[in-house]
Amino acid sequence: MEPISYRLKLAALEQLRTQSVSVKFYASREKTLKKKASLKKVHDNPKAIFGLPLEALLLRCAVTDDGLRVPKCLSQIAALVRASIHSEGLFRVCGSAVRMRAAQAIIDGGGDVSGSIHDVTGLLKQFLRDLPEPLFTYNLYPHFVQSQQLPGPHQRQDALLLLCLLLPDAHLQSAKFLLHLLYDVVHAPGSLMSASNLAAIFTPNILKPRDEHGAVTIGQLELQNHGLCVAAVEYLIENYSLVGTAPTHVIRMASEYPDEEEAREEFTEVVSGTRSWFRNPFKSRRGKRKTMKNLSSATTLHLLKTSARPSENSIPGPPQPSNVAQPSPLLKHPAQPSPLLKHGSQGAGPLKAGPVSMPLSQLQADHGPRQPAPDANPAEPTDDVPEAPPAKGFDSFMMY
Image 1 (cartoon, rainbow, N blue to C red):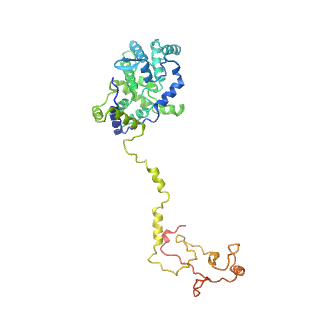
Image 2: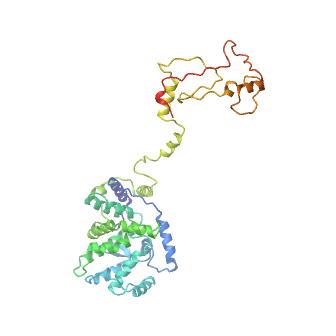
Image 3: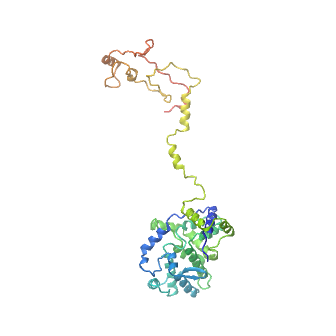
């Protein structure tokens, strides 16, 4: 099987986007691989098989089986399973844990796979469970779930096959090899195992979420999406021959893309989130919110504009002295001018500190009779300043 080109992967991304499945890889795959490998300490044994990434296994011990490049142990397990394919309860009956640990130690030491048929099937499940990156990858898990939530059955099937094109080459070839083996077990006369049974057994080992939010949260998420994942794996078992293939119109789209190197860079940018297929409408909202902090609302501007323009039915009053505070038109009952403001600092000397409600007679006794300002008009009264009548036309804007 030839590796999937990045031009075909880019065309698959575009086709998935038209089906409302936007693929993004939210976490670093290399970081997950290093963490898992350090926990299992597989680098201490140069011949270790269990717990290594598929890419490392293919560099260490790869064979070509059924036209696919897979790890050697996976090919040996498949040969033993096909030799006893008519056994009842394959992959359902558990093997001996003691014999399985001994067989695993032999395989990690460079030996071949051996044991009873149920021990061998248990080793296969253990091998898939120990992979640092599952067969269908952590990054594609939410998109496999999303593909099974599409409305039509044909849309779900097309999205599922397009997502398989986005798998790394080592994962895609090993997945197709495993699905072919499970397909043979389903159609074997004496195995008594259906595709739904095998999908329920293998789904927790090959299609699972990333365990970065704690065991409780992962358990709830896996249980919530278990039915959708089982349906996806069941369809892939029944249609294993379509895995790694693309529709004709997607292949035509891939031929229109640039060369392979540019397609690889563009594919990496799209799945990493640094480049989007469409313009993000929420990108500049935060900056616009800062500029609107000091603006007034339309109601406030209309109120200020109306208060500045006198009403047609209002009667103009006498001119107000500049030293008297104007009552606010927004108040229904304007406050009375303070005595300290009425007899302000135009008299002789500053006022002494005292209560605000000081009688006028005591104020004149302390500072003498009030003298008019030099530039004031003596003909106009200065002691009794008439209050400004409330302006008309503002009753509808009164605030309480």
